[in-house]
Length: 387
Ligand SMILES: Cc1cc2nc3c(=O)[nH]c(=O)nc-3n(C[C@H](O)[C@H](O)[C@H](O)COP(=O)(O)OP(=O)(O)OC[C@H]3O[C@@H](n4cnc5c(N)ncnc54)[C@H](O)[C@@H]3O)c2cc1C
Image 1 (cartoon, rainbow, N blue to C red):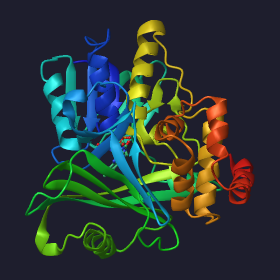
Image 2: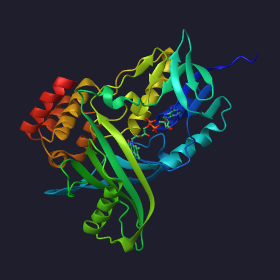
Image 3: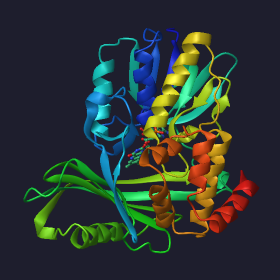
Image 4: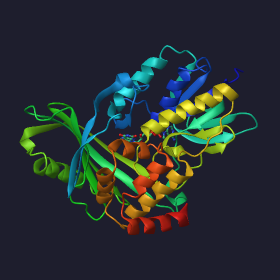
């Protein structure tokens, strides 16, 4: 009987986190190890667009389809064109990312990809078994980006908001956009009792991604997202339906929670991606944190052969996220006005550095000092009860 191989690494889930870790492994001393990636589907759709900011060219610079140094911020009583320097806000299309990684790994015979449904991960003495609908595979290390179905129940007692959004990539009849100027957040729209904003990311004079984003505990009826997108384009961009065509659309839901996701499910089962807590609780940004985590895991594997995971956010930033989630979730203060306070009183680079959890204590104090005391002290009181 043929014995089954024990893979050095099994990646359970091959979305952003699984493919990123695979990509970084193939650039490292572990590039010759046997690697198995299992996902229930092959990524062939442009199912999401990733935006993030950084100061230098990153690992996926060649995939960046547009970047901006200037972005508008709008709230009802405050509008500003923000100069993001030294940061650039960058955009990568999901399909370009997936294809780039698939092409990279095509020349590696030590990498196997399977499209199967994973049902269970079981840690044995010295291997981890990955049980799918078709087979059982064994690995020395398993990195899983599979989310728990009962995540919401696990978050009991914590804030758990949904960031839900619908984006339309539109193409206008006539040149209309300045591709150098995007809109990061526009809070002038009806807030509907929660937190709602639009963003506009033009990639050329006739094409832009316009996205309607909401932070709340319930999704809207599907038709509502489209109504609001149409209304925004008419009222704020001056584009009527005959002026543009929708050439692509995306819909997504990202968890925003102050629950701490368990990072290790066993000695050799490590959770990555959103399932491991990579999503920044107060903003939903995840892409860059996945890249940083992948590099950290590889550094540990190659230097010590072990992985010791810590949670993504240091304690004080976890507290700040929780405070903001409590302020938003309990409606203590309108989120748009809170973001307006931040951009009114701080250079944009400080706000971005703060969201990157890279600020020093003095800068944290300046940020805290920018927002109104009473609602945020109330938010802090609730945050301290739950985290
Ligand atoms: C539409 C959208 C837009 C986003 N935009 C941004 C952005 O601009 N910036 C940003 O920083 N973040 C963004 N995010 C958040 C985050 O970056 C993405 O969700 C990212 O894809 C998370 O990576 P992940 O690997 O954790 O999850 P995923 O990419 O969802 O990967 C998980 C994989 O596991 C597979 N899987 C699940 N269950 C099983 C199973 N039982 N068996 C086999 N396979 C399974 C899935 O098929 C999937 O491929 C966005 C999210 C969405 C949904």
